[in-house]
Each structure stands twice: as structure tokens, then as C-alpha cells.
Image 1: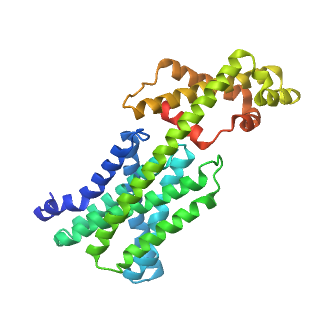
Image 2: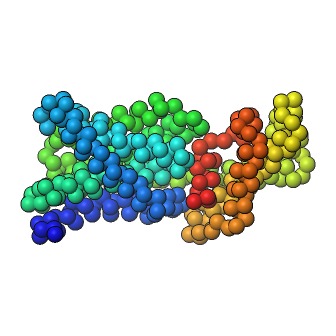
Length: 338
């Protein structure tokens, strides 16, 4: 059973970071991330805290360093590196498309880490003063969420138009996250003042990210929706052969058999129809309407997967230049397939 001291201090140490995360999710007008995904990411963030505890304990013994310099110069690398792996996984599986979901998912990872870490501290130092838990709950926990959000935002900005992400693009964000974590652990000013500074700086920064990302998403939806609709119109009207994409397919006649070229055209049509469906779902969400994934949409996904197998890896690679696929396109597919 938990002691009275634990129960009295737990809300101060655990709730602030969760409340901050709830506010971030509420600010997402497009509902880019589902509650299920946020909870899963919080859980993964908690697992990194457990892993960090064992790794830090092992490295402390191996390096034979005092705790204070270790917490300032080594622990930030270990902890931010582990948290960054989750964000990298989300990027590689196309679950992040815009800065808004980068910020939310990044903060969720840090929130999960902070919850487990503070829970451990509550059990060990349950009698510590309320001032300590105010600093840990409103300062350290928010810091953990904030630095991962910054890493995710920077990585999203640098890799936005890349299909195959160069690992070097993650290094600037990771360096900033490690640096901020290290500076925080130095406590250059009084802990309470440091906590107040964190609360004054981070919310306006994330609000600015949300505003810019929301505008970028709105503009992208408008432009891409029109482009996709025009492409479908060209295919159905017979004007397709006169377009650049039609000419590109004509150039492939000597490399692929006729049935494969037909499947390529079908793939382009189905892919574009799904892209239009995804954009319509996002526009509806912006206006408070949730469009369910219908049976027809599921059938389109099945058809797309069938065509991918029929075309083969070489054919899919050949299509990339005229599909101009970006990670945003793959992300929007994930939006309506989940």
C-alpha cells in the first residue's frame, strides 16, 4: 500500500505533465493523432525510463563517476537517445506528417518517461518537501516532454520531403535535446526559477509551432486536393496520354510488359483516389466531423496492395518519379487506414 506522504505528493509530481499533454491534444484541430496512439507512445516512453534506469546504473559503475557530473554530462545522452529512438520509429512508419503531430508525439514520449521516473522517485523520496515535487512535476517532467518535442519538431523540419531519411538529419535535434537537458541538470539558477522559466518558454513555443503547422496543413490540403482531383479527371477524360505522366509511362514501354504498365496506371488512379479520401477526412476533422473508414476505402487499400505485388519492386521504384511520393503522402494513407 502507498503511504499518506506518497498519496499527497503524487498529484504534484505526476499530473502536470499529463495535463500539459491533454492541452496539446486538444489544440490539434485536425485530430492528427488518435488517443490510442498517444497512450501507446506514453507507454513506450515509460519503457525508456526503465531502460535508462538500468543503463545509467551500469554506466555509473563502469565509468566510476560521481552522480552529479554523470547526471549533467552522460545521463542526457543516454536518456535523450532512448527517447529519440521512439520518434525515429514513428517517422519510419509514417505516423508523423506535420509539426503538430511531431510536437504531440514528442511530448507524449517525454511524458511517459517523466511519469515512470517521478513514480520511482516518489517511492524512494516520498517524504521530500512539496517544493521538490513542484520542481519535479512542473519543471523536470515538462522538460522531459519539451526536449523530445523539440527533437521531433527539428527532425520533422529537416526530413519533411525525404522518403529515405538520412540518419544525419536527426543529429541536430538530438544535439539540442541533449544540450537543453544537460543545461537543465546544471541548475544554473534556483530550481523554482528554472521551473518558472520552463513554464514561461515552452507553452508559447509550442503554440507557435501549432499555429504555423495548422496553416501549412491547410495550404497543403487545398493545393494537393486540387492537384489530385485534376489528375483523376485527366485519367478519366482520356487526356492522360498527353500529360507528362502519360509520356513517362510511354517511355517505360520498352522496359515493362503491357499488363504491368496497365497495373501502373491503375495503381496511380487508386493511390490518388485514396489520397483524395484522406484529405477529405482531414478537412472534415477540421470542421468537427469524423468520417468513418468505409468498406469501399478498405477495398481500395486491398487493391493497392495487390497492384504493388503485381507491379513488383522494380516497377514501384520506376513509378516514384511521377508519383512524387513524399512522407506526407504516406502519412495521409496512415490517417485513413488506422
